[in-house]
Image: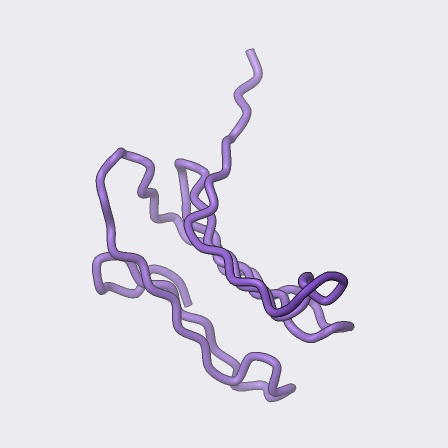
Length: 91
């Protein structure tokens, strides 16, 4: 029997109207086994993805926050941090 993961969007912020909505987009997903945060930067740049081993698919509520610094700046010190219950779970 094959199990299919169901992904739930917890957060999605679009950076513009079509056709530019694919760029400057931020997502946080839960597939029941882990949280994944993705940032789609400026056109022509690669998507940045942060996967964690933190699961929140147990039916309870969790405060989730995501901070970023320097993304889209073309600098090497760009940083994404994902927090659950006020604790960093991915960097």
